[in-house]
Image (cartoon, rainbow, N blue to C red; front, side, top):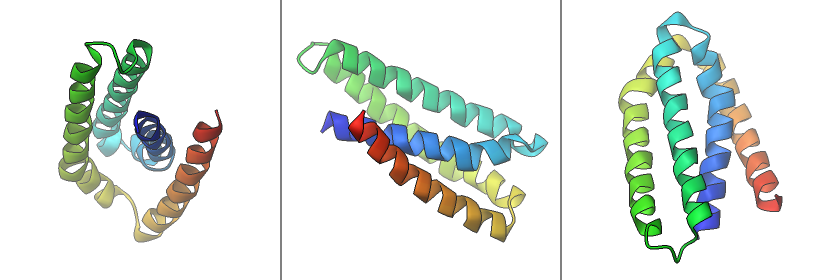
Length: 117
């Protein structure tokens, strides 16, 4: 189950960074929120790496899993309350549709790449 979660989070982060954060990062109004979201993705990646290096039988693994859960839920809440409203104002409807299609395609591609790797 941990492997599935790791792949899901990594595929999501890669696609989201490419097809949502980057376009918003190019706007002055989106710079701060994009940088913060990227930082949170990095923190999530580091927690996953820590958990992988410990192994599931290590006594600290469960504490790291709890911290990962807290960080992911915090990140999702922040995206909904802060990042998405900003990006909704900066992107046109056509951009939103196009980026969503690119995100979904890249997410599926990254899931396959990470599952093989």
